[in-house]
Structure formats: C-alpha cells, structure tokens
Length: 247
Image 1 (tube, helix red, strand yellow):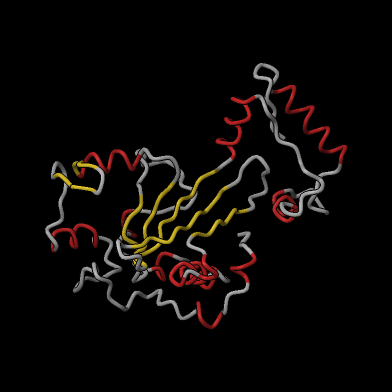
Image 2 (spheres, one colour):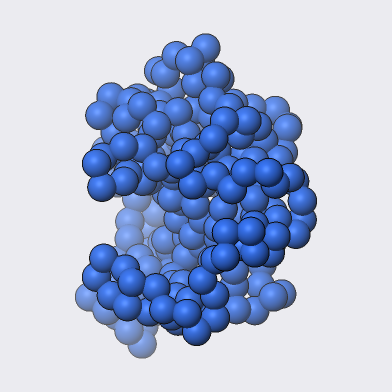
C-alpha cells in the first residue's frame, strides 16, 4: 500500500507492541469465549442476550430494528468493518450476494477473531497493520484517519482502504473503522455528470509512484505527453455520447 509519509516515520518498536492476539480485555469484550471459534458470533450473542431480528435499537439519532440495521448496512456503498480497542474483529457488512467478490475478503466465521488471525502472517502484512492500528490508537502526529490506496496495475481502478479512529463519548479510543471502496466509479460518474475529464498532471508532486506501480509498461511513473494525448483521444471517442472522458 502507498502509506503517507508521517506513517512511515513511526517508531517500529512501539507499533509492533500492538497486541494482535487480543489477550487483553475491552470494556465490551465477551469473556470466556474462544475467539477462534467459527461459531463465536452465535455463541457470544447468546451469552450476552444480544438484541436481534425485530428487536428495536435506540441510536443517538434514530430508532431501528436489528433487521433494519442489517439491511441498510448491507446496502451501504463500500465494504465496512470494525475492530475494537482490544484488536478483536467484531463486524463487517456482509454482501447481499453470497457469491460477491469482496475487495477485502471477509467471511462470517472470522467474526470474533483476533487481528492476528484475520491477517496472514506473510511478509510485512502484520507489522504494517499494527502500524496503522497503533497510529490511530495514539493519534500519531494528530491524525485520526489513514488513507491507503492500493496500486493494482490498472489506472482505471483505485482501491482505497480508509481507516478511521473510533472514539467513545469521552474521546477515548474505541477501535478502528475501515472502509474499502474502488473510487474510480465515483470519479467516473462525477466526470460524466459535470462534463469534465481526467488528465495526468506532469507537474504534480504526487501520484508518480502510484502510476508507476499501477502501469506495468511505465518506467518513469509519469505518462509522456504523447501517451497522455493518446489516452485522451481514446477516452474521448468512447465518451462521445456524454461529452466526458477519463484517461
């Protein structure tokens, strides 16, 4: 992922102390449960007598049943998930279509797992995840969110992992909310609606690294003028009906 500069400068020894095995206890931790149990959700819900189905839930600005909450969250744009302050994975908005391919794949059996179990122990995956969590837990350099675009070899796809610090009513750290979405369809819609187009800014101080990592034929990371013109002409011909083009 393309992480921001302030995140790169974090103290590695400090963020690696994040307890991804979730051995601690949060205010809302359901104790006496095996976190790796694939049936954790049903068992934990039964133990705490959780509201479900047509039970009403009073929120700070609304009153909905559990069913209504589930239906709404399943249809929310993007993939959402929540990890509590004890680094336990507690929720994600499961797609309506069980065969839908998620950008950040999750399955029901993972609910209740620790962050250590959710992330594969490959390369720097866990250390990098610890860095993000620790940064939000400590509000590193005053930041309460992290933007992580993922180069994927396609300049017409920008998968963004957005991490947001969640706080309780007193401002204490309560966990991390993650939103994953391909931003390109939103940008494409914006261009088509407003009649604008996307072009490469040769003078931009940012973006070259992302373009280089997303373009297998690029050596410099920035498109040449001829390449840019070619992309614009192609896009323009494809979008003649709308008057907008994306390159």
